[in-house]
Image 1 (tube, rainbow, N blue to C red):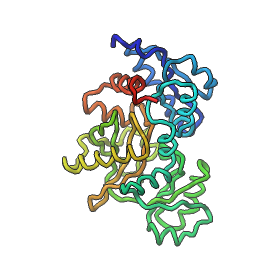
Image 2 (image 1 turned 120 degrees about the horizontal axis):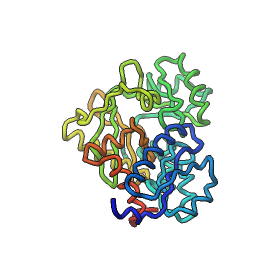
Image 3 (image 1 turned 30 degrees about the vertical axis):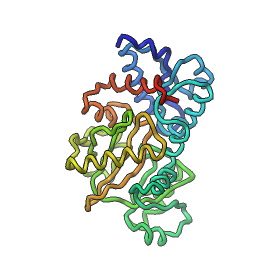
Length: 309
């Protein structure tokens, strides 16, 4: 790429202090190498090791910080304050997207299908939860990504352990109705929904958990995803609406399920998805002819347009 100089000096923001630090370091390293190969003057910048005030030395930022501090509006707000253009979603959309309950509230208000849920604690009336959303359900920390702290509850006796695990990661915990069916992810790039990917974890894992996401090599990724053409178009349109509803922009990922009756259910939005060798965004981009390097440059180019922050 000959005109990479238009980007000036780029900070690739990686690492950070969230529970997803290790994944962010992997993602950031991959993005940094891709940008450097493309001729971009890019450097790694880990906010855990350097003061964010040092970002004034850069012309723009490529955010690959996963989880809290990076995906929740904090770093976006800092960059706004410093007047540095950055990739991806702005402050408000990041804050909503990182909060699973706020995301669901926005989707419900937009009449988008999302699984029923309750905010819960160790003192919750278990029978009321079971009566309202049924068994099984999944317990999730509200402000974590990468399936951290999540557990499937199949019988009431499992509840206390699941709550204890989730509250290690977050003060706010939710119970969400377990959707039995096929799991899909939909990558959004520059206002377009890319080909849908079907996720098929191996039979010995209950759901697409942290281990399956990052460490296992036996998860199946289906492109094409196995939906009919009409179903895939419907899911892509639904995902684009869901992405825009929370105020997300630039690039990201929507996770969804299809139940036995064929209904789609939106699970969550990722505004800074993984960019590792196991990650889903590069797989979807590859399906439409984007190499990993092309993808990274395309995301960085968002900082040059009027749509940038």
